[in-house]
Length: 326
Length: 182
Image (cartoon, rainbow over all chains, first blue to last red; front, top):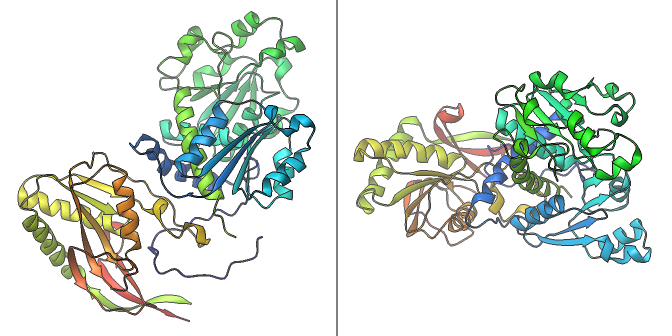
């Protein structure tokens, strides 16, 4: 698969345009990407963003290609985003949510994937509750695999759209102070963002209940703070993580009310922020729990921009991965 | 295997004179600038369009809108597995409905780039018409496409390459024929 290609020279091309250097078959995580690859994805996404504001929101680039969204965990946002991204590239998007599929009948992941591969898709986007599931598929299948979230491991497309949003709003990534707050322990969004922002030269600061702090997290190169209040005056970006309401059964904190009082982002705390701070959230938000409605709907919130940018970033990824270097 | 310059087709002054003539031809045929818009095809066409727009401003004492089109996503060779160019931004911040579009590119060769550009443009609205202006027409069309305004017609061999360099891109203005040497 990685054999060097004989250099075919196509004189139809504008020879002075720089060629894409994307070499990966799959997009499984941020951890293995280098900054140049991340830069390439973000730059490509910039060019795709404009398509979504046209009258005719389509380009013919992936015409005739099939993209399968294989979601073993529920999702509205991510799945719809991938579906729209594929359709705007003129590809055919197929959604499989496993609650209504033969997985219910006990089919294994590998069998499901092999069966799908037999129908010649051009890309499979997978979300699964087991960390490493996308990697298993990537090893076994010839088709490009995109990780839409695997267990508590990574959610690379979320991190890429977060990086894109910050870069778009603040102009750069290096040197920024990014604060991620909440249930870091169970968050794949936090992990991917930690890798992403560190690679692009930003500082990453974490905070949340002590019970939700992963042991030895500083080894990744981040700073832990006991409270949001501590780090908020210096933050360029504050990213609130969704509190999974089931966690309150696990004894991580006494009550939702206490969580919201001690770890939520509210207007009181917003008084201490820098002017121009960005408030982000991967969604879906729990209004009044980790973020108060006034902040979520306020002027510093870029939560909805994140969603818009998600489509552009996913279009860029489909463009880079599909029709790859055979 | 690399490309070297074999011959200079147009130097800096010739390019400027030709652009001035093309600008006048466009204004003459369209009787002025009413409803006229210039659309440059990335990247060479954009530099030419910007220069022509400046000339129009001088001649007509009024500005015409300028748009930029990137045809990367409309290419017909996407699935061939060849190295792909970086996708640039398309910027057409005005509706094209009923506008007289002058599509501008540096070199007209097989005609596939222009085909892709027209496909892209139609998605932005229905122009009144599209006229094509190119600096160099090097022949060897693979599609039935012709330019309305041509700077210079050049005879070339299919193995040769025609490249236009621009000062806006940090190069000396010139149009050259390049050949492959081992």
